Amino acid sequence: MELEIQGYFLLIPFTINFLLALILYSRGERAYVKINRSFAMWVLTICFWDMQLIAQTSTMPEKMLRVLYQISLAGQWVMPSAFLYFVFCFTHEKITLRKRLWICVPAFFFLFLVILDVLGFGTVIDAIRVNSYGNMGRSVVYEMYSFLAWLIYFIIYIFWGTILFAGHIKRTTVAFYESSLLSLWHQSEFLLSSGAVLIFIFGLTVDIIIPIFKPLVFPVSGITTLIMVVLMSYLLFKVEK
Amino acid sequence: MHNKIWLFLIILIFLSIDSLAGDIIDRKAVDHIVAVKNNVLGLKSYRYKLTNKFMKKKLITDEMVYSYEKPLNIRIEWLSPRSKRGQLAVYSDNVMKAAFSWMPFVIEVNPDSDLGKGGYEYPIYRSTVGDLLTQTVDDFKRLISARVIEENAQYVLYELANDKNRANVKIDKVKQVPIYIEQFDLKGNLVNAGYFKDFEVDVKFPKDYFKL
Image 1: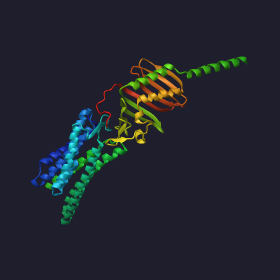
Image 2 (image 1 turned 45 degrees about the vertical axis):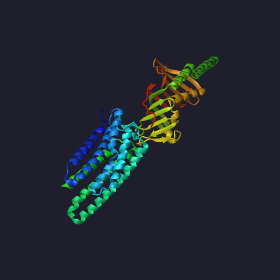
Image 3 (image 1 turned 120 degrees about the horizontal axis):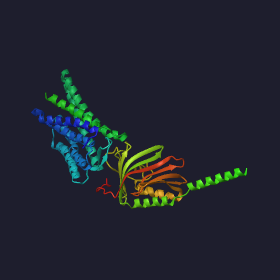
Image 4 (image 1 turned 90 degrees about the vertical axis):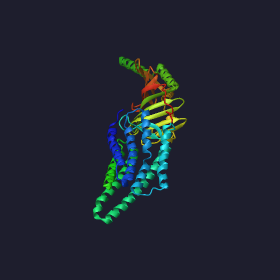
């Protein structure tokens, strides 16, 4: 199996994201374990996303590629719930039963769709087709209703999480600013974290919009997710110190 | 003076013989193309790499993998230009479905709509090489000349002309399928052309290959 040049570049964000997720999952003081682990889980789902981006540049046979896509989609399609769970943990929201259901039900539903696809019901992947990465890259064509349902879930959860996150940043920043000018350092950290989430959303949006106008030659989200993960990991390390 | 008139008459006769020769219809050429058409229409399934050229303000070139299976299942995968690379269209059970290159999912399309035709002259269900040959044969009614331009053991190249256009048809003599069909206007400008590469016949397609 060979990769197109983009695939080799995408191995960098995949590796860094995966290592940071492992480090964050296995470290931290008791008070921060939940935040670190929830973030690590979210980053792991992003690793599945990276895995799909890398697979799109590979020359492997179509049957193998389909299996790889199914594996990556199993992780990737629960990303919105993982993100929301992290935001709940980060903002110290009380995770009530209703919130648990909001997190788990769609995640299990989309996981179930992928399992059905693996069993041959064609609920997620409609076809594999050539793409604009080099000569041999192949992408997924999704089943329309599943994809649109997931897109709505993705938009709502990312929007919901971002609003909560931004609200938390604003509250914290104001609190720091009012209490002490020395906390400007902390402000910059929190501004960085909000920037990280915005970069993350920006990358995914660009990857969806660009192909409408011209062929995508490199997935922007591969880079922006890396920036987000690095900035957020830095923040989590810093907060703990 | 008489000599000059005789010379003029002789030249005139030669010129008219030459122009008559240009208008001769080689029945072997016509019969062969009809036989190839019948052969292609009789094929259960086939696949080829099609380079399609057509004039639309400027010359547009598309490259695609074209698959066909009886009764009328069609699958087209675009390879170029880059803006269309990855675009998929299938026609099966009188339904056309397509995934445009920028669209990550499949939608149902009316094959007779502008979207369904995608800038081409014919809808997908009339795009097979059999249809193309049928149209070429139908145009024989207006044929004014048909002749062999080139021939060897592998292929034969015919030139056909009618009152509106001229066509070059190259046939694979072994597989009895077209290698290319080029159509020109009376000024000699290319109007459209189809080049059929790697023509495979009786292909066993995977299950659901024509379903999206």
